[in-house]
Length: 466
Image (cartoon, rainbow, N blue to C red; front, side, top):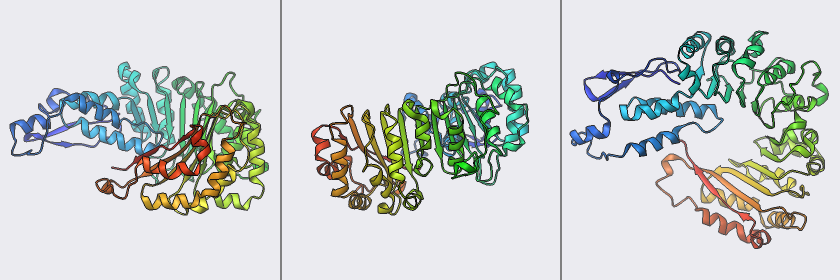
């Protein structure tokens, strides 16, 4: 949500947006909006807008729908909301659709703003019912907001804890002891929790993290970047799971652990009975290398997503025998159906393909239905050629023989997906950007058995930052 209003500057086509806190607290009235859109003005003043084209409002509404945040990345989400706020200031025709989306988001920046927003939502139940996502920038804002919103945010599905800038510090140790009861009442409909902390913003203990998670009775998806102090050795992790009682029939089934604190949170999930109920796990390879998480999940696990980040190969090379231990634990996940590996290839291709080559050299669960390898990279012919030099004929032959074997009767898709980045300034010049068909023609001859069985897929998607 966002505060927006317009200031007239003489001409009906000139406006000046006034930036306010991330909450919609002043209703836009016809007197504060434009009486005509830019395209309507272009018809009256063709000399001022010589290249303007009048488009139906339905097309603009589709564009606004495209701006709606669809990613857990809060930085991108805030950028998208800012663009929607800007579009809402253009004209009355654009206002309705933009505000429809903006009203679904509340961003709490401090205690005073949280109290003001809570007061506004308490007065207008329609606004409260429209909220689906709450972003908390500081710990001090969570308590007053949760206390005032008991049983009022009936449609909130996503709760995000993240400082809005590097300088800000989300301090969980400032949480009041009674806040967990208020969280249970105010956010009883939350199904998705995203925690993105700075290096210094950590829960002081696993007990506090457990109480926070257990206070969300409908939680099913948990994404955590940071959260607990990094502890690679499980023996150093001091936590008694019997101190905090886990709710019965707690629905948490999907966990995504990323970067700092992943190992600490992983030890927490393993020591409790949470890991035994997980059907989907996504994490860095260096957090999963010892296989403890896979062992705890056992036969319940259905989807596994492994990411190889900047330091993964260095860590894996230093730990001897990690692949045998990992493969042994992976084979115990007999009901695993989807296996995905994401490799970040911004530089040093050969270095970062070590983990993937080693991982796919051993057996995989026989009930697999889909295997996907995603390459995050710059989308250019030079980068494709460099990737193929690392993914050479010997490696491809090994993968081709393994995945086309008779033990994988359930397997129906093997995908090598390129998620390519293209600079916005280079979009006009496509001579250096290979097509999806070119990628398929380059890779298919190296995997003849998978091609013959009709299993191979070679999608390529491009993205850019505006």
